[in-house]
Length: 246
Image (tube, rainbow, N blue to C red; front, side, top):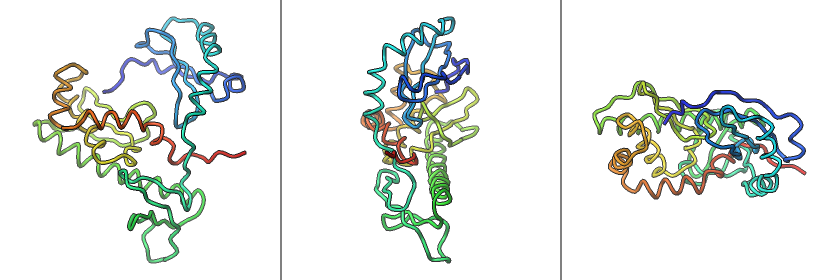
């Protein structure tokens, strides 16, 4: 569901990277009721969330007191898996190995036989893989969302697929749906759950009992898919990152 409670106030906390061991950003939120920290998996950084009206100095004190917790969470993150030749990525949950394609007649990127065959090197290869996977995610999510919405007699105004850092999907009051392209790495059952979740918001713009009953009706077994997504969130954000060095 779309989060309308954020003020959009963000900024880097300069000088805190050394003490925390990671980039730190600060965000002021209308919805927050207490100071909170969020480890950002994709950026391998930390977000300090402040309720509106809470002095920045209180947030910085909270941040300093949580340095050990932050370090433990960052160390527990899976290592990045860059888009390079030889890397293995799950495509809809099925492992595929990136292989450089040398046949000039072959398409720029093709997925077949457990491989992602791609022309190019370095940044060109990585960009081609990312673009192809985003297009694949878009086609699959758009198809599923339209079918799912039709089951409850609703139409979707617009469907977008993009990078999303904190959510897997959203639904606006205008009936627009958005999804995180990284769902391309998840099993089909997980895509079904996320699509059902956002389509259900076309009827229920909340997370009440009726909403969850509708999700279950649209996607039997949604509880297992929801659990899988929570347990594997960090893994889905590790793909396409920069390999650690040193």
